[in-house]
Amino acid sequence: MTRLSRFKPVARSRLQGNSDDIAPMLLGRFLVRTLDDGTRLVVRIVEVEAYLGMHDRASHCYNGHRTPRVESMYGVGGTLYVYFTYGMHHCMNIVTGPRDVGQAVLLRAAEGVEGIAEMVSNRKRSGKRLGPRDLAGGPGKLCQALGIDRGLDGHDLRHPPLVLTQGEPVTDEAQIVRGPRVGLGECGDAKGWPLRFAIKDHPEVSRPRI
DNA sequence: ATGACGATTTACT
DNA sequence: GTAAATCGTCATA
Image (tube, rainbow, N blue to C red; front, side, top):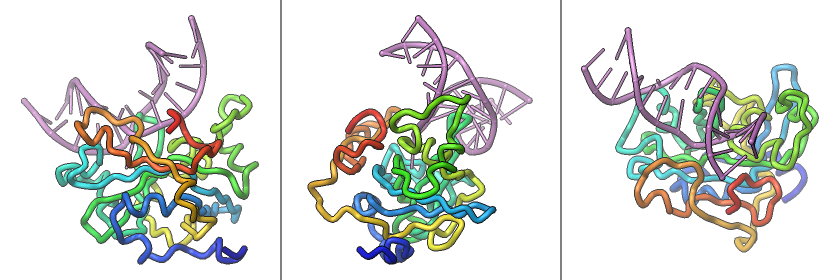
């Protein structure tokens, strides 16, 4: 992977499969966020979770649930789905597959690549020092570091102000670990499905450890 | 009009 | 480890 191709956008055709197939291929990719003042923030994705759509009880699209909040999750692969939860946090997903299917990959953690000082500033709470995993080691933290909110819901990830690029993908499958998804409510067998993927032993991967 | 509920994070014991 | 914070959304009435 050459230095230049790292910043080439990922083609939509690469995002048209099932979310559990695509999720591990997103590990190592970059998210390139351009702020209004021109500042560029870059992170490398290190942890994701697949949500399978209508037949996945943990999914916002379970049983065909379709409301204004989740509408963008039914968009074409390569669309961004951002939701607001717990009254204070945003989480972002990359939609996969054809339109109207409702599959997506939740971005759970990333490592800072460029613009780290700015991201730290975005993350600073009450003047405390940031510890391990405090920059983008969780879905809400990642969104806060990059300044992502519902205003970007439905955005096309091939274009600024948020682009998914080739980055430094993980080619060695042995470097990928998987386990059950985090934070789910009661959802039967879906609770144990191993749809969480992360780069093995990466320090930014969120808790609980995989 | 109302109430229950989060694909979480943080602070505190 | 446990618990509080905090509010948009949606099902129910």
